[in-house]
Length: 302
Ligand code: KG4
Ligand code: ZN
Image 1 (cartoon, rainbow, N blue to C red):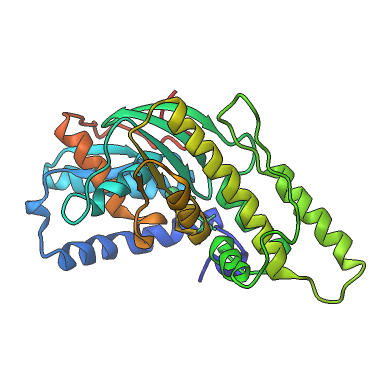
Image 2 (cartoon, rainbow, N blue to C red; image 1 turned 45 degrees about the horizontal axis):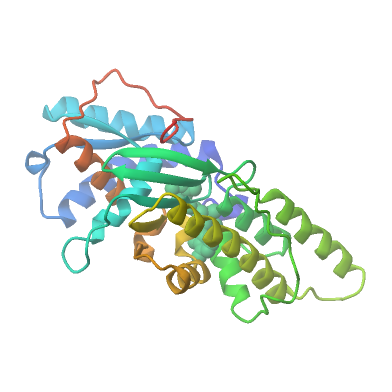
């Protein structure tokens, strides 16, 4: 609600709010899980990538807990956390993802296609050259006068729209696994400007549905193609945009391989996914010293 007033995350506001919330949230999480700090084996925290102010608050809280409790500290990459959201819910009622897998990480800050040969082994295949997929949703939502965050607002508006009403460009960037969404955003803007000269109310549902269809088609095409080329056993989709129902339905319908998509509660940013990634790092022997710093631009893999 705080960020909605500004139409996006305001870094100063976010980090100040983090300072206020972090210890009460940790207390509440432990209480709800019926455990005490003593029952914990290690403290995992996001080291990057992300907004410096927010990362510093989280990492320092984790360092304080590690120092005070004598537990080891494990720094986790935020994108790795999104990948491991698939291990939070699997294992009991659903099978765990199998390697090698192609992972599409689609969030507000990132759009990355990654090949994972095994746990914690990533090869970056491609990424967005301009806007992240979630960022495109947020910007187009603002353009259409829909609220923040834009992804859910576009999805809702698109439900009653025709995805074929407007033929928006699909930027394929042939012979590369990279993505580009700025041309699509500009095409929507141009369409809106043209329409504004002719109609009194914008066909928001049709615009939203056509935009969403263009994003989904490119994401799904590239992910399936990458999985085929790299002979992946399975596909994994994660990050805030993986909450998108059109994306979920399309990849599930079209993929010849098993697809893992986290339940909605684990798609957008959460601490459970960082704990899951931290667990796999911890059991494979990773430990970080208390001197580590936040890495706002930390890549998942080279
Ligand atoms: O992973 P996330 O929670 O935060 C980052 O790490 O960036 O992703 C947030 C992004 C926002 O851009 C939001 O608009 C988008 O995920 N998002 C969606 C949906 N729900 C959230 N995009 C499309 N459809 C949705 N249903
Ligand atoms: Zn995220």
